[in-house]
Length: 593
Ligand code: SAT
Ligand code: MN
Image (tube, rainbow, N blue to C red; front, side, top):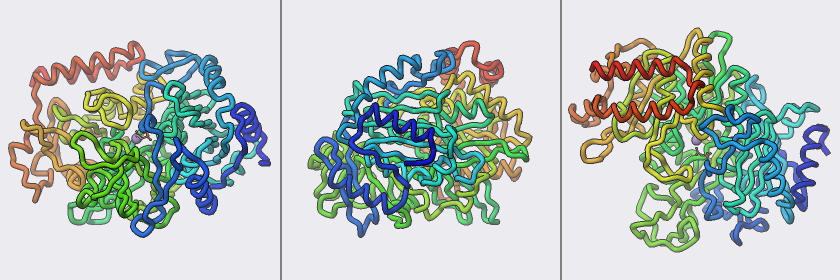
């Protein structure tokens, strides 16, 4: 029995509704994790598959394999709701249901949903417990995979209960996989009650409620009320040859290479990237008027396909690290000869005997992948050889640049510095990306995704843009805002920029701009590098192709402007005037080019 009455009361009420066979309070210890893995290997099952399978421990220390329900492989945005009492507050960017109606529906679906199962109670912090920006949370779940994943992704411990004490100052997450029926799947948020309620899915973004559900959807709402920002951003420190470290954040939609960027191994001598986070940043205004970032998470939940010693050597070293128990692989393929995980893009030849992510034998057919395109690893950030020494700093790190990216095969230049904060917020508001496999929708279609937050902003994005503008006004030393795009293609459809470790060259220019080391060229889109300042030594990109990375074709921009306008118009009178003005200014500059 815990001392905390409010926590206990909520757990009791939940147990009465969900009717689990037993309740286990987790303490986040390694001993407990080992026990849960045992249970997941021997007792709990999904569709007759054990929850965990042990992998080759010699080559992949502490690694276990998990296969999800085949209908449950990505975030389901159409089943994700933000239930403010007023629909207007949720905005056109969110699915909305009246909170009372939503709760009635969920209560019906949750009645007896944990029968025959264990209910795990997980006390955890998002952020370092000593950080003034950290938040205490409790998640309830009925599957060991989620309990184990939360131990990797958050700071889980009994001390959280002590911290909460008798207060009700904690965020609640109630999760049950139900019977995995996609027709009974809902991920519902109740921002005013600091509550997330998710049923029917065991997939990361739907089930690890500390992640997108709390640290972005609920936290963005808290930040709006309390004067800070919860963002879908990488945090890294870039060390130059003199040892000076410049901290930047980078917003990019899911599956556009955030994890690769967060773990980037520099190809430029003397430069080094230190990892602080690969997905979420909480940004607060420091007493010195600068913006400070913390990563509320402690783990990396990254896309496996495409990860190799060539694309992301630090990630492979992290995945093979032994510091933190355990590491999980979900829906990758399996090499049955060696009992190792495998995915498209991993180094070396395709193994002879593979089973695919659904457990069927696989012989390299043209039209199917062995690993699911959204197959993932879950690993502790403490395993990373490039972890910043500031990672546990409760204050966070001061941010000098905010970088906004997306996947655009046309139009958008490799890198642009915005003219000022307001222009930067507009550039973030219009950001778009070609869709990927991280959520269930058609792949390769352009969708506007402001600040990469479209699926994660827990309130009306018109208000969100206003909030960004206001934060900028409060910062006496605001970070510069840049846009990047690694994905522009040439006339034959091939990527022009090599990407991955070579992206350090773009980061170097950004750091040079922040530190006033180089000048820049004014264009209708913003400030471009003088090509001599973009270190491309040894890349063998012909000059004309390099110029193509920065080409502005005003006629192509007409369609883009119309699309931006259509997108922004949906926010009606909640769209700040400043954003409209920036749009008009951009349209004028392109006209007179
Ligand atoms: O499943 S997650 O939402 O955590 C991953 C992602 O889509 O970014
Ligand atoms: Mn993400």
